[in-house]
Image (tube, rainbow, N blue to C red; front, side):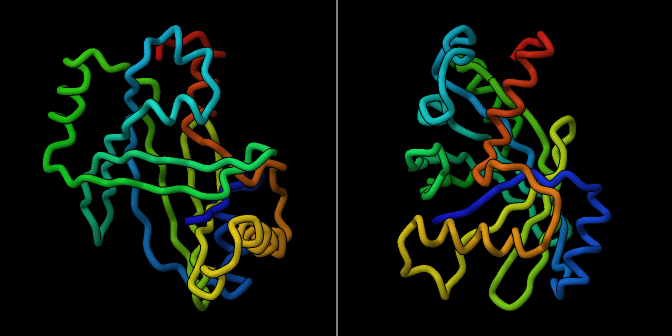
Amino acid sequence: MTEICVQAYTALEELQRKLENAGYEFVENYNNSDTYFSTLSKRDIKKLDYKALLDSSLIVRHIEGDNCDIKNLVYKKKTLDENGNVIKEIKTKLKIDDIDKAKQMFSSLGLTCWCDYVNQNYEYKKGEISIIVQYVDSLGVFIEIEEFNSIKDKSDKEKFGILKDIVNALKLPLGLDFSCKKPYMFLNKTIKNNHQI
């Protein structure tokens, strides 16, 4: 699966209005509560690059909305290109029934919690294209798009370029990184503000 994630430097409501003006219809909103645990120590976590850190981590994920209540353990395996863009991701999911017990178990095993945040998601759709507008407290607003059926047979790099073109066509003030790594951004902000991870 190829996807892009880029920061949008605009108010959430303005971005939603722009999407509606561009013909995208609101589908639903839901929250991802993600807690990242690693087998590594706090000291090691602060020194690792994103891929190495994610390779050593499990996510306790709770997706909750009007139409969903999903609890999973998630492991992500990402492929990065030479510029650090995530051009492919494989997610392994395991259904669980108790988020708090999973977190308690990982903490009891001595795993390090290095990121715990809520991702507010607003899904918009036009044809086969689904755009997720995301808001993360203390980080800001992001746009995420995953590959869709008509581009599935293209190369990972081609898909990444097509998804970038779709977002750029919205003519919004965007960041330069189309492969934002929100958990890593959250971690770095926590370290910079001298909080414990």
